[in-house]
Length: 362
Image 1 (cartoon, rainbow, N blue to C red):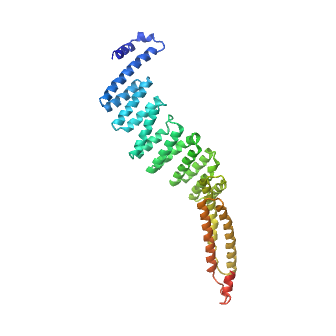
Image 2 (image 1 turned 180 degrees about the horizontal axis):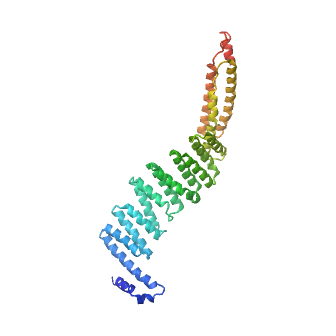
Image 3 (image 1 turned 60 degrees about the vertical axis):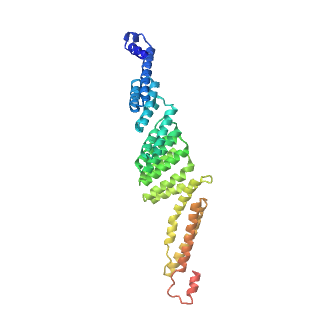
């Protein structure tokens, strides 16, 4: 008490302070006052008057902001006391302020992560999403942590149906993630955002996003997946020509060293590229007159041989799911062709004796 009183008197003495050319005395005296004020608030806290203690700690931090040590401790204690009285939003606000005074403080960072986790445990998903989104922009955390916060916020917003918030969080942070994080994290975030845009029927925006992502990533290995989704977006815009161009890019991005995931997208794209030929094959009808019947039969046979070659290329990707799909398509094609031949109409000039011979030749 005596030290604080003397410090107050000395600070009010301009003659004395004028001799303090470097300001060291003034700084020392203010330190005495800030420590004394801090001890007074601690007494309030000891008496379990937590709300008053929280308010006083915050006021103390503002009054003595030049004393970074006291300000940091005061803000941290204020946050702790706001937590005690069930005001987590105020606690978060003050923990974030404390982190500005001491960016390297592991304890405050752990407290903020703990609070985000507690929101999840309490099923307060919207508050958790907001906090994770805020933490993702706090440079006190390392890039790996910020990347994790972004993905968690994105997934929470998505689960809550707050798709615009999910989109905004991912769009804002994706360039940073791609610049600072591992390529795999960049890719996963980019794919999630693109699929979200497609789910929102924002197909043009999805296409722009995927093309922008292609300019950010150096990984050729993931191009099959990106081009596949660009093709899907164009198809939903009823632009089959551009869809096919990107599916062709996707199928060509295949390499023997590709991951199973990329192999699957390349094979899927290759399968979709054959579908129009399968539809054309199915549309060919065996109809009279006989000249038309023979011409259609020959055309259908040639188309079937072409389908065999095209679907065999899909099988060659060794992507189980789409290899099986290609073989099922071939099975359907052979079975349908056989049925068409069995049911083919007979020319009216055939007799009972010649009809079986004609059908056998057919």
